Structures are given as structure tokens and as C-alpha cells.
Image 1: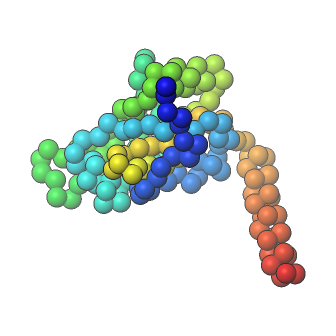
Image 2: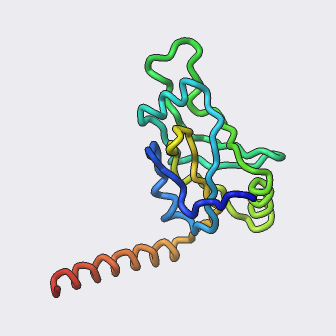
Image 3: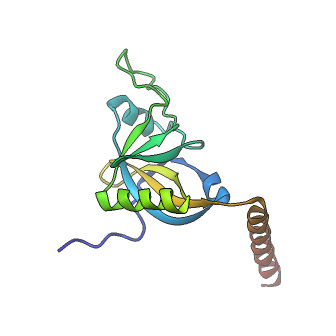
Length: 160
């Protein structure tokens, strides 16, 4: 019998976070994927370096790749150091890849990385979301809701 999947993923150390993604996209579904990394990439990530701000994921055949993510070269690496912006393979189950592929091709959704972290076992993982892009009026509505919630908190704090 298969063990049930946790609702939230076990995040021990968050390395990089794409905070802009939650503002620019409607997040539909979230997946946890492993990342196929080289040795110096892992060391650079453990040092807290790395950025996924302008990155995205794409499905090619039966594989998913993280494109345009930046993991800078490891400072103590030698000539075998990695290339900073190379496409990195993401490790997912076949049914998850199929679900992503159908959503991207049929429904026009995007695969957006939300954060890179190390789990409790010390493995580098990425939180990947199936998302639909927001238009400008949706973004304005999000800002208005956020400001109203902040004002509500301020009013409750002043009254209480």
C-alpha cells in the first residue's frame, strides 16, 4: 500500500523563492520535484546562492526541464565547475509529467517554480506550480484585497 503524500512539503532550508510568481499568476496545482544537479551546484545552493526569479519549466517529451534558473559558480570549484544557467532536469513521476504536459498544451497554463529548498534528508527539491497568468485588472484586485486585509488588521488592533 502506498504511503499518503503530505499536504505540505517538508522544507528544512529554503534557498531561493519566487515571490513574484504568486502575484503574477493564479496558482492552480503545486508539485514537488527533485533536481538533477552536479556537485558544485549543490555546494553553491547550500551556500545560499541561486535565483529562480526569471525561470520557468518546460516539458520535452517525457521529461521536464528547469530553464533559465541561475546557480552561480561555486567559489572554491576548479575547472570542473558547472555552467550557471544550464537547463536542469526535474525528477517527477510519469503521471505528474503527463498531467503537466496536458495542462500546458491544452489549457495554456505555465509551469512556474515557486521555491528551491533542501528537505529533511538533505536533498535539493523544487516546488513547481501549474499556473495561469493574471491580467492587469486581476493584479490590481489582488493589491486592493491585500491593502484591505492590512487595514482590517490595523482597525482590529486599534479597537482591541
